[in-house]
Image 1 (tube, rainbow, N blue to C red):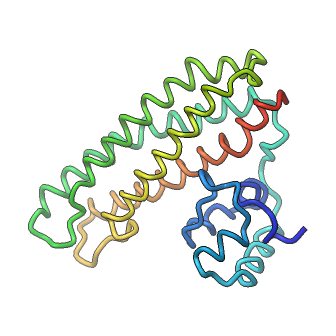
Image 2 (cartoon, rainbow, N blue to C red):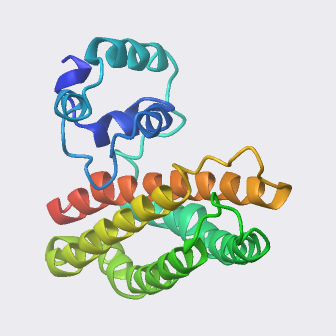
Image 3 (cartoon, one colour):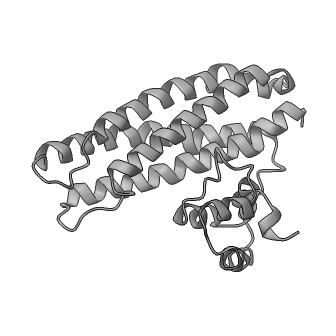
Length: 220
């Protein structure tokens, strides 16, 4: 099967660094992971042949872990340690840095106005979301009740969409997370941290939406 006929979420999970490539071209492989590469590329008016060539080059390297076949309990433990714990570390620091940048550089036209507010909103929403997963949904899946968890999973997927929308707002106020020429060290560090957080959150959502939730619902 050609890459163009495969879903973005599947490609992101099976080809090393495909997620970074999709992020570069602003292709949504997490919440929009079920759309094919061809459909996503057409929507963005991208060169599909060139995209396939880049993916073919990346595909020459084997992925470190194929989460599509890992036990569900192992996926859940990985998500908590790799993503939930990391988000809890990242966001308070980013909020503090954004608050400082907005205050110190308030007079500059390029200052990311409202960034601290949007990061705080993301932190609050994710904190509630992750707690619900850890206390309700993940235990259900680990106990083999994933096939009966359609309700909680629908709620989690809806909250993933809301987080994705907030990421778009954050990218908008930061000029796609690109520091201006006059950015100080804190400003640059802030944007570097935001880029890392966005990558982590998109990979986190992709693993849940495209692997954990479908497999849990299917009982495998």
